[in-house]
Amino acid sequence: MAKLIEMKSPYGLGKSRTRSTNGANGRCNLERNVISVMSMTGGAGKTSLVVNLGRTLAQQERRAFLIDTAPHGLLPFHLGAAETGPGQLCDLSEAGSGTLRAMNLDIASAYSHSADHMWMKKVILQETDPSEYVLIDINTAPLWLTRQILQLSQYVLIPLMPDMSTLLSIPCIEDCLDGFSTPGMDRPSYYAVLNQFDSEIAFHRRVEAEAKAHLGSRLIPVTLSRDARMSCSLPQERNWMERYPASPLVQDYRRLSLWMQRLLEGPAREVADL
Image (cartoon, rainbow, N blue to C red):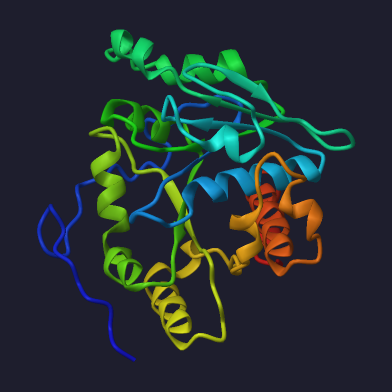
């Protein structure tokens, strides 16, 4: 099996920016479960991951609040919102489930507060409550905002496609997080998940093996299957998870959601049981 192609770190070959050994250095305690989602390459399925994970949480009678950092991002539309815009909040909860809300950040108004290092914290505290899971789709966000989000996040979730771009980017994940993190603060803890994975395809298995070798326990022991019906379902229709409850991908998202809940709420030993 071919080895990963080693890419040069911006801090020098094999070197990363010096970090504090204190894992909690600079982290903000919001009393919220905040997960930010970002990708190393384009087309990794970042927004669909946020949408489907939020929808799964709601189906499991949890409370989910989804944030798209792009003022006109499509995240709320994927959930069936009729319209959206900067700062607009959409309640997309369905009967018989938990709550599901989504909003696009009002970046234009935020620029006047770009020197305010507490801006994103104030947004989350104002719009959410402690019982909600906050999932943030980091989508074309300015660096100052990305740094605030990472500082507030318990974990970063990184979707990986089983393709050549992933093979090239895996060695650079921690360097990228270093570059996005506030100088002098620890990089946030992160986990990666393989998206649109097909175990019958040899190259997909190769990417999985390389990711396991490089990331170890940082690779979530759940893969997200491919299901073309997800991308073909219109947001205004009954959501695809309800239409195809037996889909392997629906089951994958349920397992991923439970894994994440146990990571945030339960003993570490329970996480490994999934």
